[in-house]
Length: 282
Image (cartoon, rainbow, N blue to C red; front, side, top):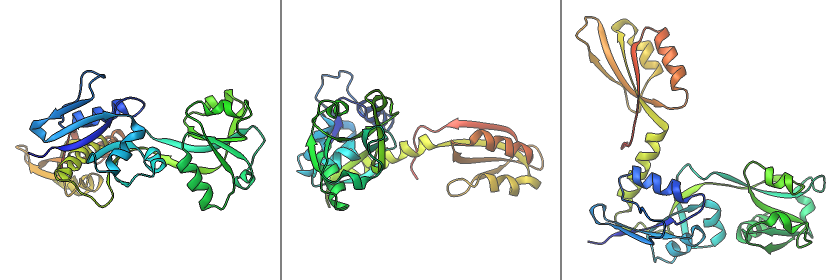
């Protein structure tokens, strides 16, 4: 049997979350961080634990079928790989930053030196806007490059901004890229077994966004209650032993679920319960 070959980040911000989502999708994952491969024969998948920056290249060349990496790393690699699914974790913003008060907009970048670990992303961004600047490749700790005279401006991932402030820098101009973890495949290629793999992962993503809501309500108030909880396709409504009452079950968004319980109570619902969903198929 041919196994689907999947690349997983071996370290860094994406590693733990990637393994967690795969476990929730029913796949085996390594227990030892030194383990480089893991074969899950029962589920038809072989996992390879690689540097996040290399994953898109392996997938683009067809060495591996599927990979989990960051959108920033995918675009920076220039690999023949494409985004197949957004995974909802590892979100970050990619911004320009310079000395406080030194720059106000992107037009001022012309003729400057821009230090970054993401040369491909930055060059493409500048070229699209007709900005002629020199891009300097640095691996890590780009914040110090201005103080050391290597660059005039940096382009980097911005989370809280505290590191920039400590270096006397501030962001300016529009966001270069909004990144997050993504599932990638080779351009135009749908490998055997991928649809099942993708469907499992999507099921986990949906389960994280929704909860199951159950409640009892009188027949006379069902229309008002169901308007609040329409479900994915339609809620389940079943008669109760108590005359004139029904039980309703529906998937509802996790965000705002507590407020929804209050609204249901106001229209007459009782015995309102929320239950986590571990996986689903839509």
